[in-house]
Length: 127
Image 1: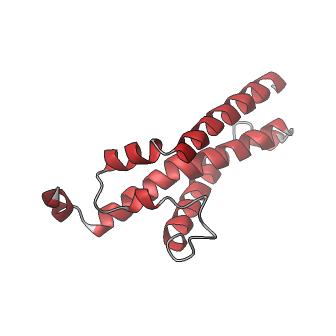
Image 2: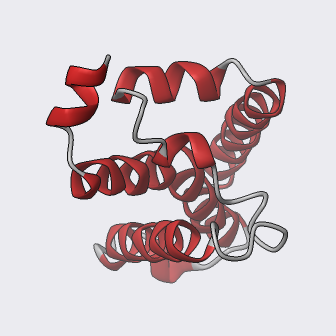
């Protein structure tokens, strides 16, 4: 395990943490926001490549802010900052596994899947 820690740099660890925060916490939030806008009747979103740019940019900014400010203000960022994602001792797969086995993370994943499924059905039925 010590050899693994020695080979991984702090920069690589930070990038992993930002990527995991973006993928598992930020991206579903902004994807749901876009689906809600579509469901509310915003016709400007149809076929617009700006939607993908918005979701990507907002997710990255959200993850960067959570990763940078989360350790400094843990009470304010407790729902968007996951310390496991930035743990230097863990490999990438260990970070995901340990996060996924937490009851709160499991509940969060189920809620995201249900929310995105309902929104996708709603958007598809509205047209």
